[in-house]
Image 1 (cartoon, rainbow, N blue to C red):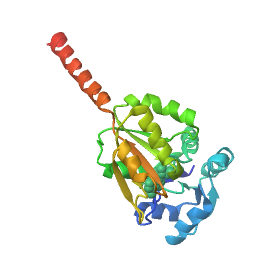
Image 2 (spheres, rainbow, N blue to C red; image 1 turned 30 degrees about the vertical axis):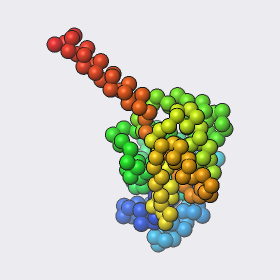
Image 3 (cartoon, protein in one colour; image 1 turned 180 degrees about the vertical axis):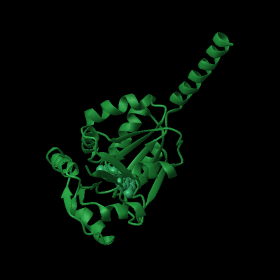
Amino acid sequence: PGTLYIVATPIGNLEDITFRAVRILKEVDLIAAEDTRHTRKLLTHFGISKPLTSYFDHNKHLKGDVILARLRDGASVALVSDAGTPCIADPGYQLVRDAIAEGIVVVPIPGASAAVAALSAAGLPTDSFTFIGFLPSRRGKRHQQLSPLKDEPRVLIFYEAPNRLMATLKDMRDLWGERKIVVARELTKVYEEFVRGDTSAVIAQFTDRQIKGEVVILVAPGEDSEQEGASEESLDEVLRRYLYV
Ligand code: SAM
């Protein structure tokens, strides 16, 4: 069988593609793309001309079978999404899972991902973090998912649509109170911007302003959950001292 390459592409700045990604895209027999028109522009920019097929959320079952059949026949296939790393809040997971089940080799070609780019420059703790991705668009469901995250001891990373940014920040303030928040907007693009501050301050900064472009929201853990972590540790230490020493 052929090989399935999971190829990361830029999240804005076209320079953010790796030499290896360009080479793999030039070498494969077929490129499966979320939006073929979008990807064709990228390929044209890098002088790549390859057969393209679509693989997106609504045709993933049918198209997945077609792509698997090509792989079985020995074709090498690259999966790309519109931006960043495929499978990260983007289609691809089922294809990867099914390819692995058939013994097809799956090779990641790493590169940009908005979550990691945002975290790397946010100025929030980076030792461990929780990637949530997109919240449900319906308010009730959103609250249901946000509520239990109140006590999450790690930095939370969300993807959000610009027109929902304010509503989500307000939901976060209602459910969790003030937190240290970073909104990373338009990463790697001309209007790249980091807005940092307590929830209310960040909301104030975006008030009366048309919010455009793409955003990542990062949220530091509440002080209570940090303290919880600390007290668990010391309890552990105490137990160790009394039970094992
Ligand atoms: N697979 C992509 C990745 O690896 O980051 C994510 C795709 S997801 C459909 C799109 C979301 O990613 C956007 O709504 C936004 O939250 C985030 N995103 C993508 N590009 C971004 C950028 N340049 N700046 C800020 N956020 C971005």
